[in-house]
Structure formats: structure tokens, C-alpha cells
Image 1: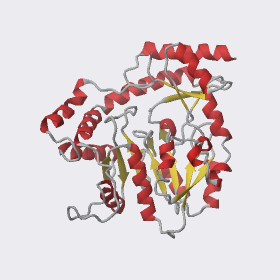
Image 2: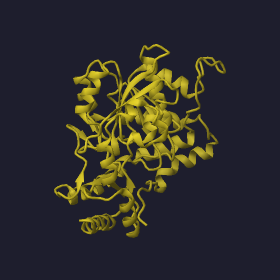
Image 3: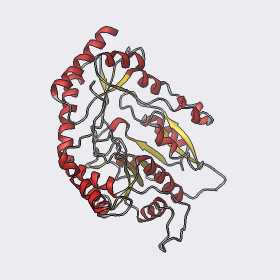
Image 4: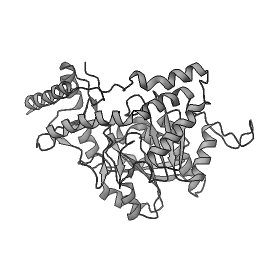
Length: 374
């Protein structure tokens, strides 16, 4: 079976991890935390990086920093404009503390991201609402352009799938007030679990740093806030440092795979790939295609499983999740496009060590599948 993803972990990427184990600094202190922070700062060009235990924690701290930034009546919920077809952790992070009201935006059938025309309407209807940007499957939304268009709107980013993509010549996740990164095992750069918060705001960084470590104040064992244990371990950071040293090699392999897929599918009428936003580069996290006429994802999954290929679906509509169905704004949203993409899109294997013969085998399986359903 060709898996949907396999992390790239050559022996040289793990030498820091072995050193961390030998040092006995296993938990949330050690030199590799500082090293990982510095490497990420250099790579992203951001002022502040806070390493964290996972991407969901990073998204939650995005929500907390935004809540701190916005003045609101404690008895009111903060409206936040969100995509209607993303991984559930992006929504959940804003619901943990029950301070936000999700306002969904319709999906764009070409980019698989938020529909920018619908976003215009939502910002007019909710002029004080912040906007959560999610770069679906690594397709980058041009946040700097949105900030120019809406100078009074606060933007935050779930950059968990977009890490190492770019907009307007800068790294994704660096233009928003705060953003989240994931280093989960299926990401281009991994530490097994792991994440980070990115910001250019000192206030946001200091607040997030306090919260991520149990709300610890400047005096040890005196706590100023109700905090969390969201700290990255030294072992995670050591794995991350090894990965970051290899990221040019990893991305060269990923780019080669994506270029083969794009060459095979870009000009066809029976297969559609994501259209990229203006002046952006895709993070090349995972490669997805849309096949009009697909009966449903389950049908496609069975077919490709029979070919020895693991695939995964595009995300489900926000209305499909039971715990989100008590929100009238969600129940009233038009999720037609999200449902169509979920039915007709499949995500193909694209891990760094996928070889050319396997890529061409997958492309041929797609061709055969299309021939069977037409």
C-alpha cells in the first residue's frame, strides 16, 4: 500500500534527538528549544516564535491572544469570520472557552479556500469581526492583500497546512496578528507532534508565553493567569531542529512530486486542481484533485484501496459536525460548495520519498478511475 504520507526521517535528521536523549533534558527545558526558536525566526523572518506541543494548542493560543486584543463585553460572544470547510481543530480552538461565535464563509470551488466575494459580504455585515484565514491543503491566501483591502480588520491565521508557502514574497503566517503552525507527523516539517505560535507583536508573544506555561508569572510558582501546559519538549525541539536543517532537501523532493502531478493534470478538463491565489506559492503540503462526476468519497476510497493507494477526503462542511450544530449562523450557511468539494475531491500521496514510478502509477490509477466513472 502506498501511504498517504510518511515523514522524511533520514538518520542525519535525528542526531540532535539522540543528543537530547543522552543529555537527559527530556521535558520542556533544554538547549534545543532555544535552537528551534532561533531557526524558525530566521526561516520565517518573524520577530517572535513560541514553540508548542502541537498545532491545536497553537490555534487555541491564537484565539486567546485575539480575545485579549479585542475589547468586548464579557457577556457577549466575539463574532469571528471563518471558512466553512477546514479541519475541525481550526474551529474548535475558538470554542474551547465559549467566547466566540463562528460566522462561516462559503467555499470557493477553484481555490478550495474561502470565497473572497462572500468574505466581502461577511466583513460588511460584521465590520468589527476578526477573520480566521486557513490555507486549505497548503493553498495560500494572500493575507497582505486582504490587509490592504480591509485595514481595520484583524486577521489571524491557521498556517498549519500552509507552513513554507509564501504570499507577496514573505512566508505565510507572518502577516497576520498571530498565526499557528503544526509539526504533526504528516506535515512537511515534523517533530512527531509539535507546533508554534508566530507573531510580530510583543504583547501577544508575552501573553501566549505566559499561558503556554501554566500562566506562570515572572516569579516562579506565582501564576498570573489561568494557563495551560502547552510546552514543547526538548526532544520534540531536537527532532524539529534536525528537520529544519533538511528543509531545503525536503521541499526539493516535495516540489518535484507536485510538479509531476501538476504537469499530468493541469490542462485537463476532466480533472481540476487548486487554483492558486494572486502572488502566492503553495506550501506543497498535500496534492489534491477534483474529479467531477465522482459518486462520493467512499466510492473513490474503495477503488484506490484496491489499487494499493491510500487517499484521504477533502474536509467536510462545518454543518456536518454534530457539536457545531447549535449555532444558527452555521445552520443557515450555504455549504453547497463545501459538500461538492468533499464529494468530488481526493488527496493523493505526496510524501518526500515517493518515487517517480509510484507517482506515475498513481496518475495512471486516476486515469483508470475516471475511465470507469465516465
